[in-house]
Length: 266
Ligand SMILES: [Zn+2]
Ligand SMILES: [Zn+2]
Image (cartoon, rainbow, N blue to C red; front, side, top):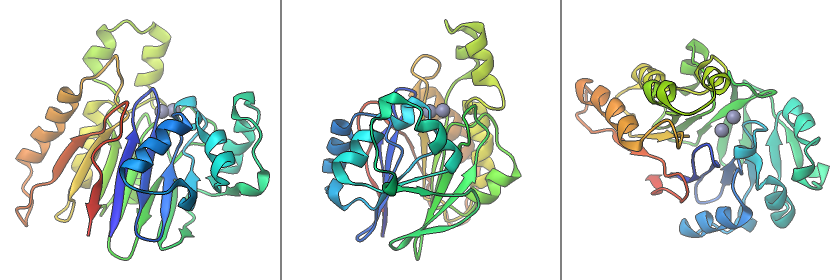
């Protein structure tokens, strides 16, 4: 069994749970400790049982609740050394017991309980951003958000996932016509910004396979995207793609301010 639950997703805060009967992992803590606890309550996971929290990068929408969670639950943190060195300069983080910090390296597998975690590099305007895949004896989950573009390296890491959690940040036309200042539009559209619906769809096209069961579109911009636009763009791709076993791939958009439906593969 493996479970994924998006506790919050979007530019106002990100937190994801991945786990099974004996291993419980968070990816990022970009919302308050209270909201993380509420998300964990929904899937009936005791925060004291969390085996660790994996950090993707130091932007505040990914780390806002990290200090609280680490202190309150004595929770191990998995992070790259460069991201940690940057993060420790943030006074908002508060004091964290350094013995809780474990350094991870891109492309180096780490085992947490019965789940294998593989960090991989992403192209983003952060110090040393990574995303992760999670594998147990039967299933693979691929998570990738906060990247301006993708390449064969990203595809190689995400391929054969049974669940894909992928950024669909903005609709290019909405962003271009929207109220963001020019420099911010350029940053978002750049190779170290965020994935548009268009790029997200073409990445997904590279990752469709017969055993892909769920796709979750994530990290949507509040200003520059709409859940229906992102959903329909990928749905159109899925409808025209022939899957051999005739099973539908379920498609969701992760909710922004509240947990999404939990996905469980038995
Ligand atoms: Zn982000
Ligand atoms: Zn970011």
